[in-house]
Image 1: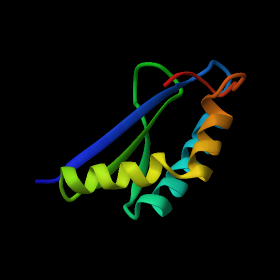
Image 2: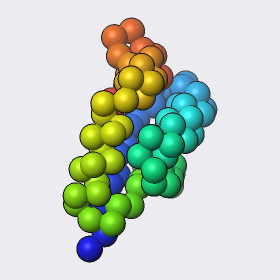
Image 3: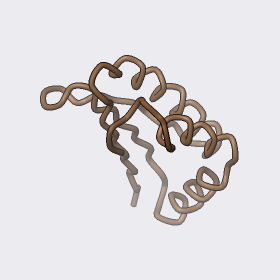
Length: 94
């Protein structure tokens, strides 16, 4: 049974385009690290600036292994911290 992982984040007002650009960058990096395609999407309707990521894994074990690779990768951690860490200005909530 496949496992689909989805994560969403809401851009701060006025930062929507910057957030989408970063969303594409982090999806590419995540794909390289995890070894699976990570897709980027935006909600149609509702809040403007909602960015989402989606990855499909063969099973829960593969999903956990991929997430472990991602969350222990220093380059990924630095990239996320630059966007979401203290003083970051792209997103309001993640």
